[in-house]
Length: 434
Image (cartoon, rainbow, N blue to C red; front, side, top):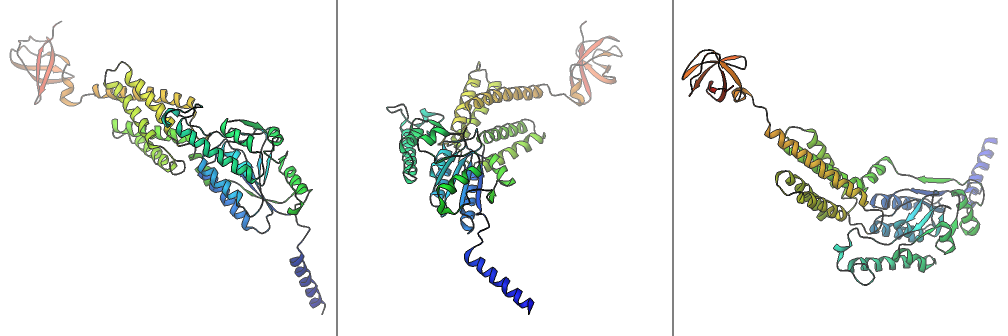
């Protein structure tokens, strides 16, 4: 009877908790950590985190901890669309101090239900850029090219739509796109671009809980969170999405295969080059690559090789460096800052590749011209002496061995001779003048 009564009480208790909820448990919060450029890998990571958090019935708030220098506009649109359509409130928090939400990150920050920044961070500078504006068409009034002007207008409309949707200040948001203006955390708060300045995640949660009681977040105490972080696979893929690494993989692959073709059988340069090129082509599936830029880089290496074999007085080297710079600038179809190759890297690598390729080609050519001869041919040019006097045919001592020899000039015994030709184990010699 006692056991039955205890079971009944336990059953009723569980039933009541299931009906009214267990108020002693803090509301779980999903925290998605992103410290990366905005590209397909980071975008998919954020989308997966948002989807998983939205499926969890216990999650009441999603926080994206953001620190990004920028990225691709296509990936940015995917992320902002997912945030705007999220079934649960999303807070984007620029953290830690010294971090930023530049270009692509600025769009993501403004798209959140709650935008927050740590003091000491900055955001903005969202003007779409082109590394080589003169390839985008003739300039229009204002300095931008025609194509770049269209991109700016489209991007400005994009940021206006986000700001209007979230009731944020439209004008300063648009200036960040048109004039590439960046704002400190305090300026963002003063200009109504963000909602909160928070020193920590706990501080942010406390402020949101205080100002939005409808979310039923605990205003004090440590809140239970579910953290989403990059897996090892995502970390590796994100590294392969680095524009500088992709650029270096292309150069290393091309140079490695070139060395293998010039010195067949070396194996390692060819294997290394093949691996680099495979990783390069895999990376192009992550970040869009302009293959016209690839062709310019390959042409640069060809020009460097030709410099060794053609007398151009340095013009081929200059042409190769120019081709390398143009190809590097064209390599990525980047439409927001943060996804290009720094020009300092481009110039340094162009000069390095020029010197390296020219040096390697010179060494290969020299090796081919000075190939060591073996067998009978190695005797040509050697000096020996006649073991006997003869006018047409006799014996000579060359290279530590006795040989039959013929001559067109008489030689005397012990006279020095020089080998001029080797034919069927017979040496053609001539007297060596002292």
